Image (cartoon, rainbow, N blue to C red):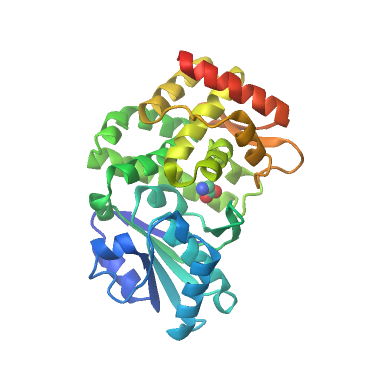
Length: 332
Ligand code: GLY
């Protein structure tokens, strides 16, 4: 099980994670912002485009050149892309070595840095090649938030809001701290990150390989992944998650408690607009989603505070609900 250390003042834990490992992997943004911390790191180009097999094999080759041994650990210092690809390299190298994750973005602090999903994209499909490889340690230092730009804040906000839909307490906390989240008030944001770390680590502890409970973390993600596959880096992953949650909730409005629906839609609309991608394109991609087990499309819908239901629809029903949702969202 992963040991998670988090806080605003844990620089010594970050330094030990870096110095205690055989190789540090980071990206060009983090290397520019934190040159001392990443002095001897292997640097990959920043962005989703690095999440591919070639960069994965570059990391594996570098591990071999640096003589990384089976008993060693490697450390990822970066956002979701760095964590995902380093984790997968650690899972593959010599059939598996330890890895330590130091998430530097809001998104990786609340979501991808916890739970051991590692992957690269392939054949145009997000996270097609991957493994469950929980980090030995995740060190979440809020100090990294100081250098995030607005786009990265919005990106992390998408996954943070998603996690706060998973329990009644977290949803009420989100409502209390929404203003602080919008203004990036440090205390409110730290409190919400702690809430997300707690929820996500409990979910992955109960179901590490997504056989049952962990599926609730896919709220908004069926539409989000389809939009992301179609539109690429026009938006960040978290922005697609916001659009996905907005659209999926409107698609299944009839299954959601009315008061809860109004509150959720109000929150999503503070951060995003409905998608503009046509129903046919979204449906074609959603029909190939990894979450589907038969010919139907599966979605995780938050139906009431702290309640998420798995819903399965045919392609025709998906298209008709998606089109009605876009009309509904023009009205509200
Ligand atoms: N990001 C969803 C999960 O970790 O399961």
